[in-house]
Length: 97
Figure 1 (cartoon, rainbow, N blue to C red):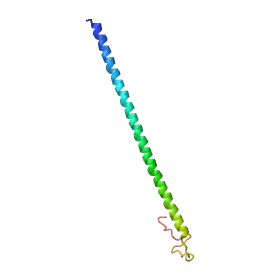
Figure 2 (tube, rainbow, N blue to C red):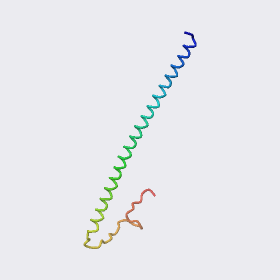
Figure 3 (cartoon, rainbow, N blue to C red):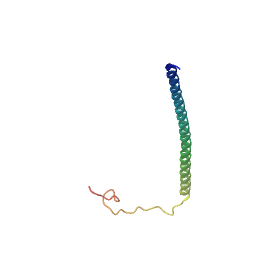
């Protein structure tokens, strides 16, 4: 066989190896992107469900608290207690001023 046939066959083999490598890399990229998208979908739905349940729990507790507070009857009016401090803000402790 002539040298040019060996060069041609070698070039074809290298081209085939490169094409196989590129196809494998593309397949791996698609698989990785698909799995990442699935993971993001699951994570987003899980966190969304947890947040929704948390907000509903807070709303339920707030409704019970408000409903209970509406039923409470105070026996008398509260009298304002004189403050122990001086000035217009009796309960504010003045620090380094």
